[in-house]
Amino acid sequence: MLELIDTYWLYFLVGQYPKGPLGGLALTVALAAAGLLLALPLGLLFGLARVSPVRALRWPVTALVFVVRGTPLLMVVFWAYFFLPSLTGHKTDQFTTMLIALVVFDAAYLAEIVRAGIQSLPRGQMEASRSLGLSYLRSMRLVLLPQALRAMLPSLVNQFVSTIKETSLGYIIGLNEVAFIASQINTQVFTKPTQIYATLGLTYFLMCFGLSRLAYALERRLSRRSRPSAISEESASSSAALAPVSP
Amino acid sequence: MLDFDFAVLLSGRYHDMLVAGLRLSLQLTAVTLVLALPLGLLVALLRLSPKAPLRALGFGFVESIRNVPLLAHMLFWYFGAPELLPEALKERLYAGNIEAVSAVMALTLYSAAYMAEDIRSGIRAIPGVQMEAGRALGFGFLATMRLVILPQALRVTVPPLISQTLNLWKNTSVATVIGAAELMYQAGQVESASFRSFESFAFATSAYLGVSLLITALAALYQRRFPVKTL
Image (cartoon, rainbow over all chains, first blue to last red):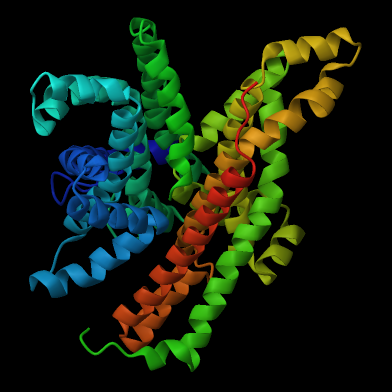
């Protein structure tokens, strides 16, 4: 086991990096971070469209969110893998393919987080700012979103954990992220599958457990600080309970 | 891509492959659900147990499983775990459908960890005085759980459990990586055999979406017939 780690640790962490493309754990983290960062603005727009009073915005985005949340991520990855090339005309590499699939998939989920965040605020917030003469968009930007986004922070960290776990599906299209690298090592060593895959699991665990503890700590801190608005918190938790039911 | 050929999907070899895949996906979901629900309940009870070591055991189970991607679970149960078994058992396993067995194993543990959290929060939604009242009447911890708390808690737990079933349905697609011949795997096979990628993926997508919408409709129906009552 120690010999195994001694031989392959660098390969596991960065792939063939100095001599070849970046891979391994570093690629997993980079892909997850890039995916979430790019999905954030898109998810915010989708979330706003989901609560928009304009039907032409609300309906198509609602349909998109339902379709993406009703299909497995793997399906989205397959569509991206096989149809991006015929759409753009040139071959897309695995990293970009996976990134696009992740951004589309995460944006649909983030949209629901944003929607739940906005809808958890008391209706009076929008009414008050509209009656003060602010337009719909300005009320959103200056009054509702600052409150909603703060409450969303723990969900965002949890979404990052999900994104890290989702990047493992890049394995299927041959992206050399950490699960793929582990299988490569397994083919080379051949005699120690149990140790190799247990190490892979442990690696994911250390990363994701740390992050989900962070989310938990954030949640406790935020709920301590926003004591006065106990009513809005209660409605937030009840809408959060309803949220997962829609696909 | 422009000439969409429905005939491929409606009959013939490729139709049979896709339908067989859909059937296995549904079977994986059903078997996993049957196994994961009691396991999830057990883990939820462990996490709420009055004894600290049992609580730690439940916590360890949930966190160690939820923080590792399903794909890594699949790889472990398919490549890693069978090596630990005694020779005779291993041979019998390899003679049978080891892909499906490993997939059910991984899916069961993964879903049970999530379901345990849903059940636990359902139980915690029941006011603590219910437990105290049950104990004061002379029932033990387990008897109070079974007769007083769980009948109330499980009712609140059904909607999140249905949405967990939806996740389970989508998660069966990950079994592709270990070569279990479920829907996603068959769609890939049909794609590479016939080059009818658009048709086969359209079939798979609409099948996934169809079952997902069915499960969602079930959840909505449940919430309308049995709205959550607050005490």
